Length: 297
Length: 309
Image 1 (tube, chains in turn purple, brown):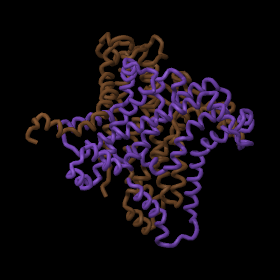
Image 2 (cartoon, rainbow over the protein chains, first blue to last red; image 1 turned 135 degrees about the horizontal axis):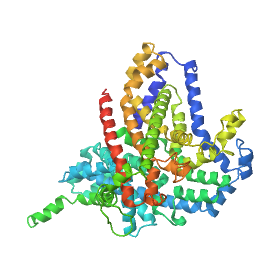
Image 3 (cartoon, rainbow over the protein chains, first blue to last red; image 1 turned 90 degrees about the vertical axis):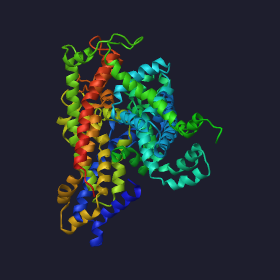
Image 4 (cartoon, rainbow over the protein chains, first blue to last red; image 1 turned 180 degrees about the horizontal axis):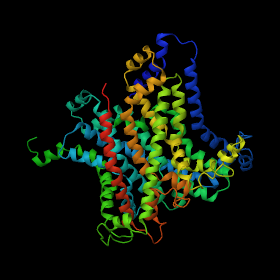
């Protein structure tokens, strides 16, 4: 799980040949592997590259010279998509909803995980099982009742409803990951604080929270990507275009600008950029966050 | 200490429970209560307007599975879900394991890892729209590329052909999702004690032999775990199909899965044949009844194939 270990692993395997005979040049079998990987990487990246390249082109260029690079880098498409076509509004909605959801998840899931990791109380097993049920049962089963509940609470077409449901839905996974993480922190660290009579809140907020940063990063990334990219919930809960998140907003946008591919590509690029940039900045946390579920199981 | 009542002591002793309260309240209200309601709604013939009424027992399930007006929708959708799973599991496990293995054989693993992971950061909505443009019959890049290299006769209306549409969407989904099995397999391979590979190398084993004789058996439990996640994912499929083919899952329902069917029943689009929150909930329950026992079987299998080092 830990990054250190994985780094060592990669280096070990890659250098396995080097240990026996120092490598001076790439062996033929390695060359074949490089070629296969390069072809697959090209398949992975080319569509993304086309998306960005086309986002700078004029409509005519896209249709006449689909494979050519943009003749000049112009941000005109982005400006039009952002302001005239409301992508800016969707973008800000997505950013606000994602940020508040992730903050709320990190805050309340870490408090709950602290309790699960450090305290015994009647009903603990039952609550844990209840959380497990939320992981095992398909979310689709809850969708219709969630829609009715949101309607009865008067929250239909309110962004708050999304934040609340996302946060609630993130609890099982986030609490499990964090509880496991907190259990690895030695009890001794907390003990002196207990002897000094520090309150539970102080122990949580001053000692455990700062120590659990890597675990918090994992659940933050996992949930951020999930919320930024989610589609079904805003699709059924939001009605007013001015309140929509990017994924639902894109469906409105694609309906309005069907033939203006230059704008469509710019809108797609705008929707993807935040996660791509974040991924490139924190590749390790990203991969760990998004594969955490499978590796824990 | 003396003047404090036992009751007060008890409250003090469990005061840490306040930290648990926000998480549990939100979870109970927005997840547990809806899940239980979902089961209950499935027993009502209710259109979602006004208070819950018209208890019908298991009639909704009878309608889903046996009515001549509607059951063919359900069976076709389940068939498509199974098709999606069958193909996805083959494609993703094969490419996932092979790529993960190749990544451990070369030095520049980090670069390729990053490259393969980028599509996985895109939302399915972006993926659907992007590939919708690339696969557009006249102006899309795919058909234009085929014409350019002299394979113009292979140019297709990929998403407009009833035989190719679902296959095309599965390939797009694999393009997006294959990074996940790659990373999970990769982490698994790194977890294998390196001495095993060293020994194989000393004995003069080829890449091919290392892959089939050592890696494939050792990765079996990971593969079963991934297969389970892909099974759950295949029966949850919705976004790509909704984006690329609309709620009607065209052409002529050729890509209709339980997800799109559920969406139409719950939120409009089925007309008089089938609407209502009760029926939609029954469909969601049916979906869960298919997914959960089979997931359990996968979990059992995974345990059996797990290796301890």
